[in-house]
Length: 179
Image (cartoon, rainbow, N blue to C red; front, side):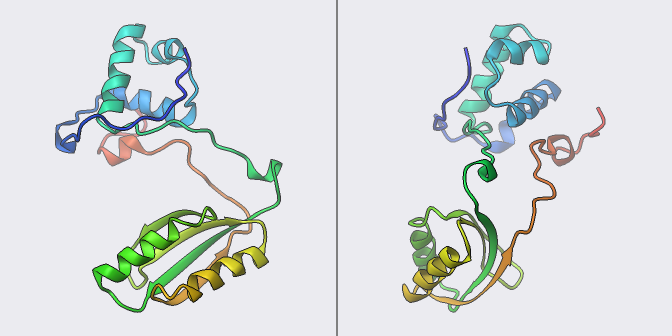
């Protein structure tokens, strides 16, 4: 059986109660790289029988640690495009201004990611668009919507250098990454 669907977490978990052992980390690393791996292959790779492996996987899903499965798509093989990062500042720092901005950007499929940040700017956006003209149309629409954008800076990606499929779980948990 292949794992292919997304799912909501069943109940909110207290993140402090989720204990991950080395086998859980192995499962997470494999799933981060190979989300379509069969349950049997996953169990074999982490040296568990299928039932205990499946139980661990269900626990990770239910807790929200594993929140979805998806495919990484090579856009270059589909259509020409640009990836653009935008650092953006709002003119007012009020809850209402942030909420209006965050609601508005949900409407644009070209904005593929957005992070609220500290350190001088308010948001960091990732935009994927066919070309610079399409990007300019998007920016013009955002500016004309009068949602509080005071300034923005555009950075066009020339080429990807590193995109991590292997997440640094061991490092984040204070464990030796060479284990």
